[in-house]
Structure formats: structure tokens, C-alpha cells
Length: 348
Ligand code: ASP
Image (cartoon, rainbow, N blue to C red; front, side, top):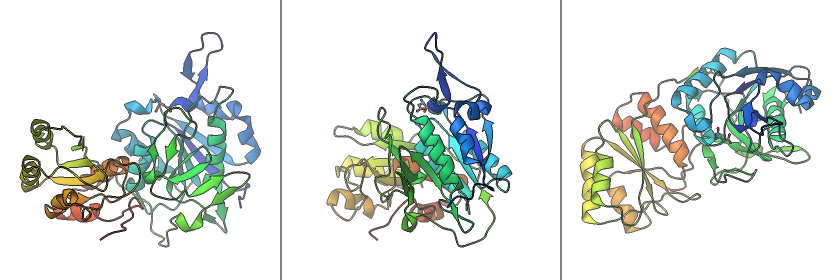
């Protein structure tokens, strides 16, 4: 399955726990020179791949990440696209699902694996999950059949599971099994063998060149409704200067209060040509505004359904679409369809 003679993989280290080592005297975690990774994980040599590394300088805790990092990553991938068979991005876990979602929209016509991974324990510690994550991510990035990469998508590999990046969410801050893909099947599972779920993986049939999108517009806001949220809060957030789109995290299948003041605020803001994208607060399942009156009132007002999108992917998709400077109708139309496998429309 893997042709070890020819595979070249580029490992890009952005930061995060994986690249830390514990000082044996002080116990303090600090980052190690990632160019030395082959010394830290000597097992990698046994693959026989041509592995190259690029380390960000300075490296970042992913909680400090902003969209400039996504731009830097897609530019690096574009520059190195012809030279490598696959890419492994080492990234902190906190915002990995946002970054993987963003790259899935920013890398158009991708036909090589871009695998994000990281770890809960530093790679230099005894019980680290980082070694397995890194080794398997590299093996997946290099896996091919008849010259066709087996996972040519932006993915997250974590604790035995390969997931479509824009379907993931970090759901556990302690367990090694930190990520889930609640609304889409895993793309592969790593046991004794790597088992790819071919039916779930997107294999591009077009032979178009990779196009990168580097314009992102961050003028969005995420508003999670809760019982007791008042008009002043809604009004203030909806009317924030410069906000062009609101991700409204609603209850269950996309339901929100039907009180008059709430619906009036929705009407007013939509009249101002802003976009409201309805995303469920539930970890799994889809928005379906036809189900209850409390959802139907939003549907009538042309609130856009996010279907089963994660909030992370919704944030990245909106920044990407607003960055393209489409007119509002086009943006709404694109929100309503899958660009990169981020939604499944089970309902019309
Ligand atoms: N705060 C760290 C980060 O996201 C946590 C991690 O690496 O897992 O960069």
C-alpha cells in the first residue's frame, strides 16, 4: 500500500503540546528544536521516507492562533505542493478543528493528504500519545494505491481515527481521544492495519491545479442563545458595528424563542443585509427549521440553515466566503451548499 522508496512528506510544526519536552530537573515544558525530530522519534527513520520539517518561528500555542496562520500554512503548502506527496501539520489541539476547517476551504482542488495532528502529552514524555499520532499521520499521508493517495483531504488524525477536518470538534480536554466527527464517518481507523473507509473519502476526478484562497474576512460573531437571554444582549450583538454575519447557535434542530421582541430583532438585522446562519448547539445532528414552530419562524425570515455543520466549520466557511466578496445572495447560496464536504443536506 505504501511505496517507501518514493514518498516525500513535509512536516510543518506550528506549535502546541506535541513539540514540547520536559526539562528533567525543573519539570518545565519547553519546545525543542523540531528539526531534531528524527532524534526524538527515531522510529520515523524506519519508514525510509524522505521527511522534511519546517518549524514556525516563533511557534504558537494554538489558543493564540489567528487566521494569518492559516494563510501562512496554505502558502507553504502551495510552495511545496509539487515536491511532496503529503503534508503533516503539527498543531495544538485547542483550535485544530478551526484550522483544519479553514484549510479545507482555502485549498481548492486539493488532491494530496494534509493531515493535522498533535497530542495531549508532549512527545518527550514517557506516556506520550504524540509518537503514535505523528507516526500514523505520516503513514497516512504517504499511503497510496496505484499512485492515488488514499486520503487526499484536509484531515485530523488523533488517537487511532482519521477524520475529515471540517467535521471535527475537540470534545475532550483530557482524554487521548480528544476529537470526534459527530456527523460524518471516520475516514480511516488505525488498528493493526490502517483501514480506510473509501466510500467516505473524497477522491477528486478533476485534474485542476491547486488554487489557494488567502482572503478571509473576520467580521463575524457567534451567539449562543440560552434561556433568559435578553433583548439588550441580542440587540447589542446583532448590531455590532462591522459585523456582517452572525452564527446563531440555537437549540436542538435549530429552534429559538418565538417571542415578538426576538423575532423583531431578527427581522431588523436581516433588513440591514446581514446574514444569520443557524447552527445547532447539539454536538450531533442537524438543523431542520421545518420541524417546530420555533424553527419555522426563523425559516420564514430567511435565516440560513447550517444543516449539520460544526460551529468550527461555520466560522471558517463564513470567513472564507465573506473574504471572496460575493454579493449577499451568492454568499447565502454557498452557505446552503457543501463546498468541501462540511455539510450533509438530509432535508431540503
Ligand atoms: N494549548 C495547547 C494548544 O492548543 C494545547 C495542545 O497543544 O493540545 O496549542
